Image (tube, rainbow, N blue to C red):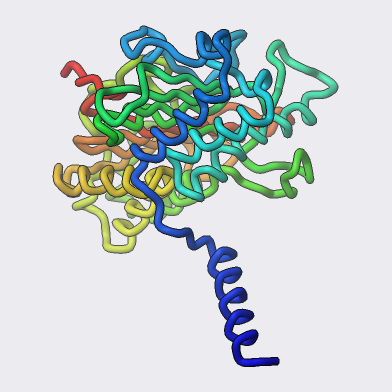
Length: 347
């Protein structure tokens, strides 16, 4: 083989290897990506579709969100999109997420297929459908001014505000998983797959690493609450952080807590994730607290919060899955304690 061909072959092998490892070429900031994606999406819509997909920025629907199954939702649903529109919508989803996050959120959608299979013999009131996810734009996308994006359906809600081509709000960010562990090869998943793995296992590692004295501070209740707080409300609860401070943790425990926080931030586009971490640092890592309620082993209801001046993580796993396995149904979210939807929270 000639030297030139060898060089080209080596380059191709290296490129393939890097792609396999998850390396990505440098991407534009999320605000720019959203603008490009939004314009592309709008170009695929007719007048009637535009009426459903675009609302005024000040519409009450902008702050109306939820992850529960519903009869109807705002926006244009994937089920009614043609292939070109679906491709354009996927670019909107990609704009606010990392490679890892895009995979995670599309897997949350795919879990509806798992539920459809598991509930065939005993279907519930609401259909399990991987295409019942809705896309909405608020305001007029542009390089100047303020506008928003909502992508939502059962078990997920993503909400963004873009101002002057920069993402200024990315909350509420909601991720859910039913079941926690896929019980068989179903709907494109392999048996044992976990869509929200680190969000749960890292927290178990952390709580079980606490000493008896640390647990007296970090574990705030023997029983887990049934649900995350303020679900569907425009702002997070403005309660003081509870539990054990990061200052009171040993070095390995601090590392676990930072990894747990990263499990949520890493799903977002790199500049959004970096801004969240920079805000935590500016407000003071020493002000971050972790608290736990419920069982400290899987299969029994459990709950945790991680909270600092700028953010709130809340996680609950108390419901059974479709097969009846207890505590196999996760709801978790990231919220902005300063105010979701780029609206200042009332203290």
